[in-house]
Amino acid sequence: MIAPTIINRPPDNSRIVVEEPFGPIVPLMSWDDEAEVIERANNSSMGLGASIWTADLDRAARVARQIQAGTVWTNDHFSLSPTALFGGHKESGIGAEWGLNGLKAFCNIQTLFLKKSV
Image (cartoon, rainbow, N blue to C red; front, side, top):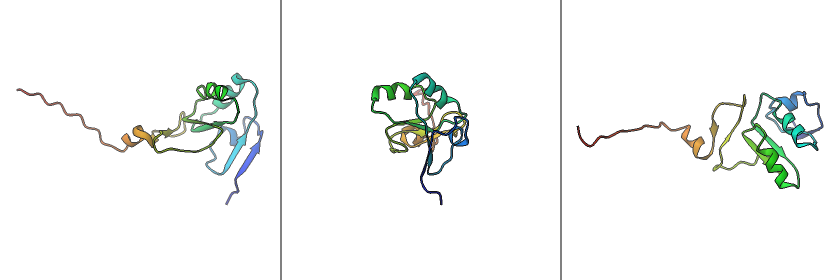
């Protein structure tokens, strides 16, 4: 069992930053310059999710739109909704789940063309 852990300011190339740990562990990385944080966040072959913690919601939205991740949370992390699609970018999986498009992944779509006359 691993206790929930926050790693404060790990190196940008550390495994906790560039890989997906899938455990109760998260790197905490501070930033001041938007261009720098976007480059740092996108400097990974993974892209399942990211979170931005700030009181400036306009800034958070501006940065979030540029992060290459399937889900970006603001002032929260890993809250999910069955109505919202959840999936990753880059090497963080194929396909998605939840939401209407996630439901469609489990369906067999069929198209029928019926001409009224021969």
